[in-house]
Image (tube, rainbow, N blue to C red; front, top):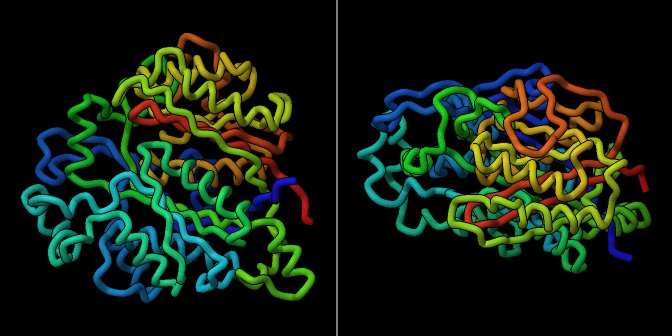
Amino acid sequence: MEDRIRVIADDITSPLGAGSQENWAAVRSGRSCLRLHEGLWGLPEPFCASMFDREAVERECASENLPHGLTFFEKIALLSALRAVRAAGIDPSSERVLFVLSTTKGNVELLGNAQSYAPQSYVQGYVQGFASGRETLHSSASLIAAHFCNPNTPVVVSNACISGLCAQIEAMRALRSGKYDYAVVTGADCLSAFIVSGFQSFKALSQQPCRPFDSGRNGLNLGEAAATIVFAAERAACGAETSGTGKGAAMPGNGFGTWTAVSGATRNDANHISGPSRTGEGSFRALRQVLADACADELAFVNVHGTATPYNDEMESIAINRADLSDVPVCGLKGYFGHTLGAAGVLETIISMKAADEGCVPATAGWRESGVSCPVSVSSECRHTDKKAFIKLLSGFGGCNAAMLFRKGGEI
């Protein structure tokens, strides 16, 4: 029998707040930090996005005594990892702990002449003064792991929009291998002229708050965030309860986590470099795989990618219909946070757990009437649920798709 993988701590650091509970409270109340940005980085087109208050982040970094010389991306990732590790109560320096970083762009703004795109307030300490090589993703992951004195080579996952789920699936596999007892999965991304102009070149951005699955949707919004989940193999808890300590960490005092990562699947339909399959092939196959461990009747909801682009939402509705999940509630979170890229899979999993804990199917902000061809149970209001399982679904560029099944369980 495979070792069960439990969630023992989590954190969300976003423009909506510090900590998972504060972010969930913002979603529950319908709050969003999406707003129009004009003239930023000298870009000719305005864009709607959720972005951090840089000065507020700097104050948090100072309060946590973070080292100097970090990029903004590294700062938000490390802030989230610190809070989650602290909440988990584990010893992050143990060889039984693995760090996994999910990001799509990392320090991409360090490439090229980034200064020509940025106002001076964004340049100081953010682009200037970094050595060659700091743009690589592994250098940021190594820096984060080293901050915790962790001896293992960290894992970096960068696979377009599904990175956050891929990272969690990789953590599950690593823990089930028996080599590690705990995995710290952090997803993070921040915006830059390169990222925003890239999405603008696809004509994918909306200058108004996005409207997932709505008939009037006209594009996505981008967002900045970092989010962390600490996973533990159940055997680690058994060892800790028997001996009073675990190889990887001292156990947290409030139990060993009530959410279980049951299964995950990635499928690539290789449809197009940027366009999703018109038949939802990859998403359908990923859904079908995780549904081998659950039935539709036990699902509180499917938390979808829901970018509010015409083809993504349509594809997801087809995949959901093909998987016989049309009667299961569906919710999307992009109307609160924007598309947070490598953080999305981690952040949206955490919000889904918090929502199900409170018996709530989150409202899909911006939705008014269905604009997809297949029926999906979307609502602009929070709905009650007494079910204790959900599926997180993501899709991304290059035809990549991922799904994960989570179930709430009792103490061991």
